[in-house]
Image (cartoon, one colour):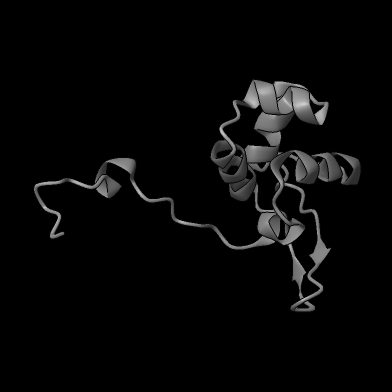
Length: 102
């Protein structure tokens, strides 16, 4: 039987509530910075498999690794402990000039 993914607890200073690391937010942050898993792994000092494990929720980054993630991606810590974000579909968000009323 597989164990549940580990949770990296964080007490949010602003809300005073205990939150768990959100692996989807890590993947989102990496993609928003235009980094591949391999390049991101090199920048934070881990291998690609570790990044994959973090992003899939199999494991969580250590405090030291989390500190490097914050430095590399430039997002605040709370970003990685918030609820999922819906990413817009790139095809549906393109501005079609035939539909623009300018």
